[in-house]
Image (cartoon, rainbow, N blue to C red; front, top):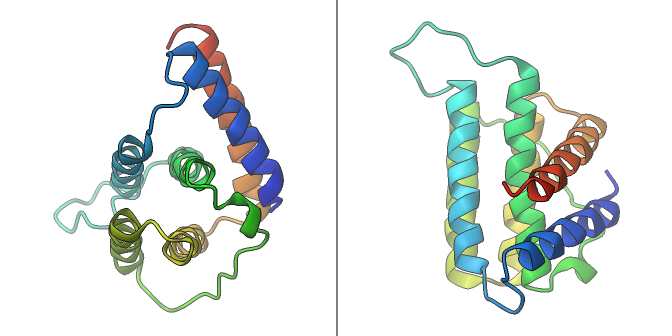
Length: 163
């Protein structure tokens, strides 16, 4: 996955949104943190991995991937906002044997730690943990990058239509 390319695309989207909504210079970190948590929750909801009381299957894989990249948008955006982009080239994402539920909980915990510390190490841990979640979901780097680019385009179009 070409992270620098994704950061560049995210920076353009962020600038578009900030200009469109008159948010230049405003600190949006806390709002982006909450948005990330909401997106992770939406992703978990689409997988239904925690719904032990239901027999209904997971959403189609395309929908799960779209929700996954929604979270990725906010992780990239937070890295840009806090100026961590320059130090991120590749993320190490050794896979550990966690269930999908455990991995979601690890991601939520990583967001919470990052929200409290806002350090490069906590950001890198969050990003790595999120990429591991993508592995748990069965996504390849190529699928994630392609889906990100498609959703980024949709997000630009939404802004152009006063979303």
